[in-house]
Image 1 (cartoon, helix red, strand yellow):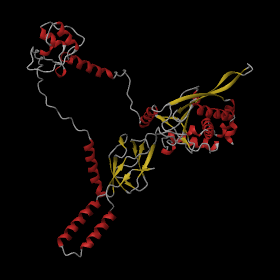
Image 2: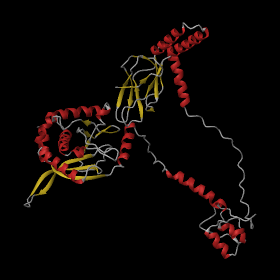
Image 3: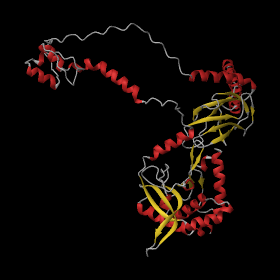
Image 4: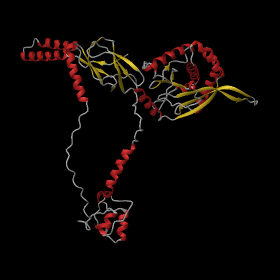
Length: 477
């Protein structure tokens, strides 16, 4: 649960104590005017105390959350709330969470309705302490809504456009001595036609003399040039700019529809773009999976999933190679994580989330499988708590159940490595004596942060992981 409710007024007890002690200290003074001013101040403070309206804020449900979406209001306007009671369901970037109140009161006004979004810290409702403040809270909410509404565009005065005025003809002689700036083409034409370029008034930017100015001064027909004067090309340039602006966004395909990102999809997109700033490299490793497949068939009736087996094997390998479990967040140092928390990618409706198996190296395989099933159910119901999806130190992504033989995974921000596991498939192999056999092979690709993990580190980790997978009985010890 999270709390949204913060008081916006001072507590009545503290004010009353201050007023009483202050007034009692003045009761012995012989100045009646001061006694009157104190009493007036006390009445003013008492009236302020009587009106206690608390704002309900949009909470920050995760470290990456910048805005939240109201999924539903559990309570309606006018409902009486008790401390600890759930009031609203908020969708964060990863999950939906019930938010409770830490105060008793009345839900006087709902500022942000269902399906609408608000930045973290913005008021989404008002909580009144008594019935007397409900009307005041509603008025405050209405005033806030009108203030935040976009202002109507101010109509601009229109007038008849002035007729276009052609630029005045170039003067052959300037009004006085000045420094002349001319284009190279203008200087060339002036030299050919023996025109004193110092006497030509330019019409280009900042008085620059152009080829057209020199031709006008020489009384010759303007030549067609690839470089035209800005006055001549201003209209075509504007038309071209308008054409580019209109064609920059392609027209939608007939019958298509634009669907905005959900909060979760926006968070995933942000993380994927952020991951591009990390220098990564990839190492693939083939594993013989006959023993793994046989072990899975043995423990599957006991509720053990292949994902849990792979997570346990990865955790045991990370114990021997802690650098692969390390993280680099600032680009200047890296951290050896004392816990091995395996995050596993799970596709859910409308996005992707990575529930975390904490201390996967220390949990029994059967307890790990049970914990994993609970996390998957909570993830699909969007009920994961922040610590259940943002505390991973190593990520596992398994697409083998879909028949995918190999793929590369994108490194999540804040982690050192992610493992992509493909399907186990029969493969024809040749031994050192030249005899052929058919064995199951599984391809594993690991994407790692090259700032802290090097090729030799990853190769050693994969060799250890391969030995564990090819002798999986050790996973139950």
